[in-house]
Structure formats: structure tokens, C-alpha cells
Length: 287
Image (cartoon, rainbow, N blue to C red; front, side, top):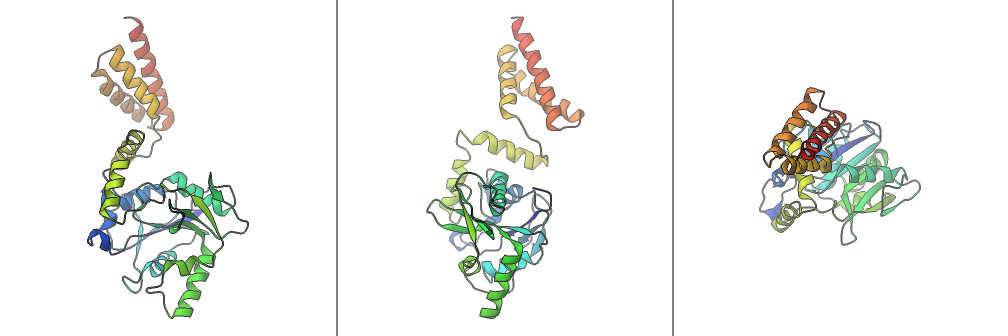
């Protein structure tokens, strides 16, 4: 998808009553704020509008507030959409710890009938794609919409009800032609402390922890680099076994440094990893 083909609106102004009124978007899962995790998933957006109180974020965003303040999700969507210009609008809540760029792409592709991945129910002329949670319910705050139909429905609701404050979200999307994408993990949101605990435990599971850690480190360091985890782990193993155990972290550090000296892209990292792996193999052969 070409840059700027979609904008993102993230709702981050809820009262979080079931969490005791804490600043939910700032709660951390895997060392990163929930809002920052969502921002990372939609980093390809032309514009990103966060509706809610200003707070530190991992990347620059536009800020908006709903009218009236605390007026609910429809008013918040309206405030965000007013600042968008792209033909497609991604609408997200700020409490989705497992949302990924791949899921975002599937939502956007689903609108165009591009298949959107396994579990997508495609429809000709659809006006949006919405995620389905583990209970089979639509999640309109994990969805992508065509901007013009979304604006149309907002205007109709404002005219019909004399305003948008307090209106349920289902009224906004009930008349839109939607495709549905089944992805229970990505639609997992954090409404309670139990949800937060579950999310924090899940990212530490064996099959996820390395990817989560690498994503957190990249975000913390402000780098966007595809890392071949398997190749680096193989290199660390070979250095540890063929040379000495402390050689593993030192070797991977030097590989990263060498890649940075050459420009720091994926090709430079792959080349440095390959050279170091070959050296480790030659070293081991001599034993």
C-alpha cells in the first residue's frame, strides 16, 4: 500500500472505570505503553490522530478532543476523522497490545477485496473491514473504513440526534457494508486488570518473548530494522560453543556495530552476520 493511502484515528480518552480511572493508554505491557504499541502497528499511516489528553508518545501524532469532552466513542471518532484526508481511515482503540502491522494491512486490504488474509469475509463494494473477537462479536474500534461513508454516517447521526454525545458505536457502523476479519488475538483489548495481567503473561510465553523483546528494544532505541532472529541466534550459539560462552554477546554486539558503520540496513546486518558466522565455523574447525 502506498504511503499516505490511509490515516489512523486512535481513541485514547476513555474513563477506564473498570481499571479504577487510571490512564489506561499509558499502562505498560512488555515494557511499552499500550498506546505506543498501537502506534507502532499503524506506523504506515499518512496521518495519525490520537483523540484524548496529550501524553508522551513514541512518535509524533496529531491530537484531538471530542465534543463534548467525555462524549463517547462516536464523538471521538468524529473528532479524529475531521483531521484526516486519506481515502481510508483506520479506527483503533488505544488498548490493543497484540495488534500488528500485518493485521492492519489485512484490514485495509479487506476493503479493496484483496483477500485480507485467512478468515476474511470479502464483499464487493464494502465500506469497511472489522475484526471479530474470540466470541464472534464485531469490534468496530479495530477496523478500517472508507472515509466518505464514515463521514456520511457521522453527519446523519448528528442530524438525527441533534449531536453525537453519548451515542453507542453500533449506530455509527450499523448501516455500513462491512467485511469481517477473524483475528481473536489482535482484537484482544485491556478493559480490566485481569486483561492487563493476561497480556503481560502472554508476551512472555516461549513462542513470543523474543519477538516481543526485539520489538521493544527497537522501539526504545528508535530504530526500524528487520532482524533475522534465527540467524543471530545461530551466530550466538556458534560463537558460544566454538569459541567461548562470553563470545556470544560480544560477537552479536560487534556485528551490530559493523552493520551500523556500513549504513545500518537489513542488507548490511545480514552481510555482517554471514561473515561472523563463517568466521565462527572456521574457528570451530580448527578444534
